[in-house]
Every structure is written in C-alpha cells, then in structure tokens.
Length: 456
Image 1 (cartoon, rainbow, N blue to C red):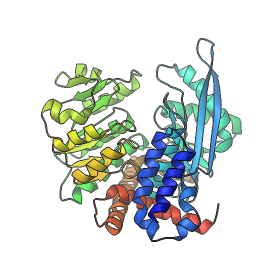
Image 2 (cartoon, rainbow, N blue to C red):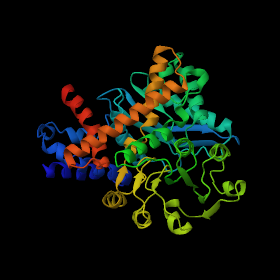
Image 3 (tube, rainbow, N blue to C red):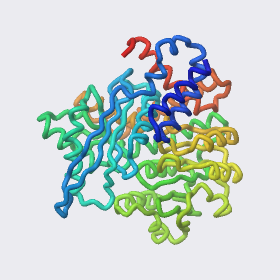
C-alpha cells in the first residue's frame, strides 16, 4: 500500500513538471494519509488518490486591458476547480506577479482539506493572475478586474464556484469583480463572490476573520498542552490583513507580539505591537500601497528595523526568547536554517498562518523539535469559514452582527482543532500530530463523499 501513495506522488510530479509548490503540498498531504489508505484498499481500486490530485476542471485565459497611458496590456488568468465532492468549489483569487499554475494548483489542492475541516458544505478551488496591483491606479485595477471577470464569469456561480479574495485581491478588487459579474449576467447573485463590501452583502468581521481564527486555533493548541496564550511572546511575519487580524486578537488575549515584516525586512518592537494605535497602524502600512514595513520604526522610535532580514532570527538578533512563531505572509518563507534558529532560541510552539509558509524539511524539523505545530490548512481556515457564513447570509437575505460572526467562527476553530488532535491521536498516537491530523480529518470527509458518488 505504501507503493500506492508513492506512485501517486511520483506520477503527479511527472504530470505537472516544474510546479514545485504543487509537488511539495501533494507529497506532504499524501504521505500523512498513509495509515488511512492502508485501512482502505478500495481507494486504490477506484484510483481515489489519483482523482484527488487532479483538478476536476482547470481554465487558463488571457486578460487584455488598457493602462492609463493607453497601452494594451496582456496578463494570464487561471481558475482550477479541484473538488466539488462536498459542495461548490470555494477558494480565493490571487493577483501577484509570481502567479503561475504551480502556485494556483498548490493553493487549490490545500483548499480541499481546509474547507472540509470547517465542517461546512464547500469544495476546493483557487484562481488568480500574474497581474500586480501594486503601483496601479484605481482605474487600471478596475479595467483589469473587469477584463478578468469577463472570462471568469462563465465558470462561476453561487452553486458552482464561489471565489473570494487572496493576496492582491482585497475589497477594492472584489467590488470591481462583482460589479462586472452583475453587469454581464444582469443578476444580483450575492453569493457568487465573498469578501464583498458591507453595503452589498459583505460579512461583518470577515476582514479580521483569518487572523482571529489563527489565534483561536493556537489558543486551543496551547491549552491542550497545559499552557495559556496570555503573556506569551509571539513573532509573526507580514503586515497585511491576516497579520493585522492576528495582531489584534493576540492583543485581545494578552499576548505580546514583537515582530511584523515586509519585503524590505522586519520590525522588532521590544515594547510589543500591543496597543490599539500600533495594531491600527498596520492598516495604514497596508493601505499606503508601498508594501514596506520600515515606516513603523519611524512612527514608533522604540522599534528597530532589520533591513533585508526575516523575523525568524529575532531571538538571535535581539537576544530575546519567543514562545511562538506565526508566519502570516507567503509560501515557502520558512526554510531549514530558520527552523533551526527558532528551535535553538527555545521556541516551543509554531502555528502556520499563511498558506504553506514552511518548506517540507523545515516543517519536519519543527514537528520533531517543538511541542506542537499548527498547520495552515487548519489554523487559517477562519477566512473561508466566514466566507461560507457570508454565503449563508446572502442566501437568507439577512445580516449577521459582529458578535454572531465571532461566536460562530470561534466554535468552528475549536472544532477544527479537536478534529486535528483526534485524528492525530487515532492514527499517530499523538494529539500534537496536528499536521498529519489536519490532512486526515479533511481527507476522510472528502473520501467518503467521493466513494458515495462513484467515478465522477
């Protein structure tokens, strides 16, 4: 049976040459499913894993738009619809210059398990473009989004595929995309996109949902090991919405956040990014459009800026002890040397906030040397959980208040942690085998649905 898993991994690599991120996540996920697959020989008989790693549908299209100088620009657009076994495809759109099929496939594949873990009826998909919104005018972003949606609208719908925002796709982009969808279809399908503005069907609390969910998951992780998050020293990366929501919730629960980061380097604040003013300033950094974090040290002189460095070495750089690291920025951001620096500095907990922020070898090292490691597909599921809550809000023609959203999300994150811990205990004999447990708990629900629906 071990050969079956290995064969699928190798075949996937051959079928998708050069798509490193996709290879990495397929190997990580399928390897951890080994004890489940061993108990179900019927999975091999019906090629369940082969079907799981192959998108049900994938579209690639050109996006033609005109910049402010009147020059015609051409970008590539993508949408990979991986699994509709338990519900309509659900997953974000990413606009960034490094977007290519390997990135979209890895994100879409991860989305299958993340969405399944929520317990909600949503499948997995992902899309995006190599368009870079940074430095573009609002008019240019609008024209690009309208051109992008002119093709995408054919492939989405409230009961088919429901995109949301992701890196480079915020409230502005979602607004332009939704407006064009409405214009083309002549319908107000509020459930076709999530992450919308409040006046036209958006969900209160959605902006901070991913960050809040990450911290609530981490809180459960600590509680299960006899510790509490209050008073813990925490280092995170990024300064966008996920980082901001994480910072806000860490502040609410009494933890001391000491770092944020950007492409230009990282900030260390010895007094903690733990006041309303400091947390709110992350939004100013994000809205500036400059994509740098250095101005934080100018605003708050007690902080120090480390140019060109990542916060994973802050223990050595600043001579402090960090209890927990939470990478919130991008994929493959934490490498083996960073993992070793974290462990050598005495870090005991690690919780992934971004999608696949850790290379496979670094993740294994952290799992072997930390008390507990929280995987992204579980910890950052709060965003997609709230997206599904928004879909329900739109379908019911109602409005949920902040308290309603937070209560639902908090319970969902507790349920996700328990599912991961229980699966880890059942198949690996360890409640802290959360990475493997998340993959298994997400997989079992999808596999059961696939088996029930036949060879589709």
